[in-house]
Image 1 (cartoon, rainbow, N blue to C red):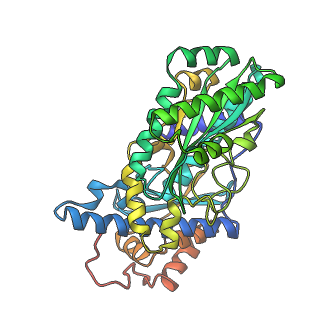
Image 2 (image 1 turned 180 degrees about the vertical axis):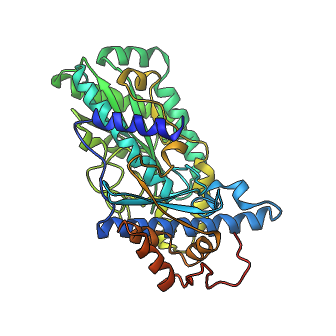
Image 3 (image 1 turned 60 degrees about the vertical axis):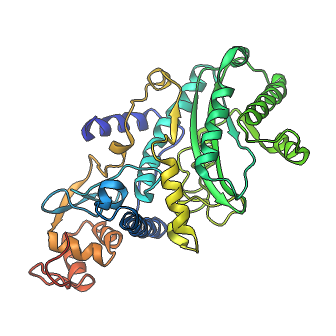
Length: 406
C-alpha cells in the first residue's frame, strides 16, 4: 500500500475512534526531549550493529545485514527534504532510509506504535457497539537470568500453540462467546533476565459477571498445563507453582481503550494513557526495562543484550490480530514499514539539505535538534541553525574534511 493510501486509512480510523486520539503536537519540551533521546538511541544502535558486523563478517556492508544501521541516516535521493505540518506543529525528514523495525529501532518503533493506536481504539469501540465485552488478558511465566531470550520465546510460542488448539480450546471459546483477539508481544529485561510476555484484548460475549471467576480459574489452569508441557514451569517446584497461580494470568474485564493502550509504556515513550501498542520504555522499574533502554543507559553488557534482543525478535510480529478481525472491524491491513514512513498529508515542504549539509548534521548528531528548529515553520531559522550550530557556511560547505562519507 502506498503512503497516500495509508494516510486516507489512518484518517478514517482516527475519525472512527471516538475513545481516543494520538498526540497532535510534538513541540512540547518533553516531546522534543523524547525525540532527541530516540535519535541518540538510534545512533548508538547504528554503532553497535556496525561494530558487530565488522567483527563477525567484515566483508559485508552493515546496512545489508541490519536495515536499522542505515535508518534515518542514509540518503535515498540527492537531498534530504524537511517538511512542516502547521496543523500539528510537527516536522519530519524525507528521502531517508527507514527500517520499519519495532524491535531494533527506537524511532520506527515509536512511529509505528503511535499510528497503531487509532486501529485499537476502533476495535474497542466496535466491540461495545456489537455487544462484546472486551477483556484485557496478560500472560506471563517464570524465567531466570540463565535463560536465553531465543529459548524463552520458542517455549512461549509452544505454550500458546498448545493453549489455542484442540477441542478444549474450541469448547472454551464457545462457552465465553469468544470473538477474536489482538495480541501484543512485549519483552523486558530485569534482575531475573529476559521476560517475554503478552498483553491481549479478547472479545467476549456470553460471560456474566458471576461467571468471570470461573473463567479466570479455567484459564489459569489451562495456561499452567501449557507452560508445564512447554518446559516453562516445573510442576514439582511448589514455590514457583504457587507464584505462577497468583501472577501468571491477569484478566481485566470491561476494558476501555485507555486501559488497553497504556499497559506497555508508563515512562519514556507516551505516558500512562497508552497500553497495547507502546511497549518501548519501562525505565527503572523493578519488573525490568525495555531493551531500547539499553541504548540510552549503556551499562556494562547492554550492547550484548541489545544484540541478543535484535537477533531473537527478528521476524516476530509485535501486534497480531485474529484472522478476519481487522476486516470485520473495518481496519485496513497496513504494514509496519509503511507506518514507519514519516508522512503527513498536511505537511508542507519547508526546504532541502544538500548531501554535504546532511553529512554535517548527522555527524554532529543534530538530526533531532534541526527538526526542533524546523517546527518554527521558518526555513531561514533552519539556515541560521546550520550556520551557527552545525558550522556550515552560507555556501553550504560544512566543517568536516572533504570528501564526506555520504
